[in-house]
Image 1: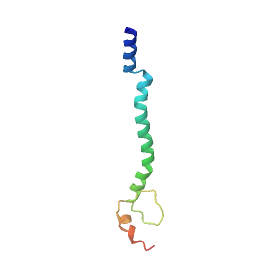
Image 2: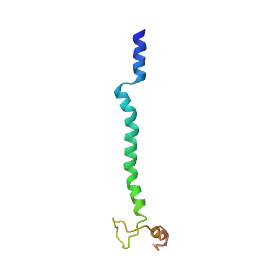
Image 3: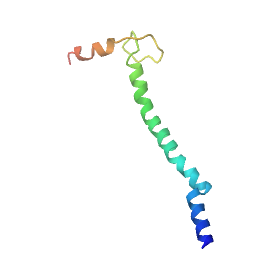
Image 4: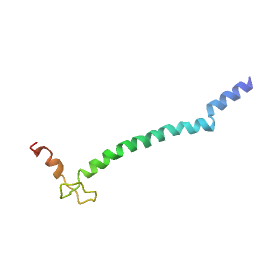
Length: 76
């Protein structure tokens, strides 16, 4: 009977592999979600870039709301 109680206590305490699995899934999920949202965050950030030309500029020129203000003024 005491062996059964000891085994139950060991299972409750968790083996090292079980403890490792306990934190692995939340960390892995966080990394994947961060990886998926990073391009969206970059696009939002560069939506406020004050580039003067018609082409994409990867260098930061300054902060502006011009692109969002002119969004619906395009005739097409």
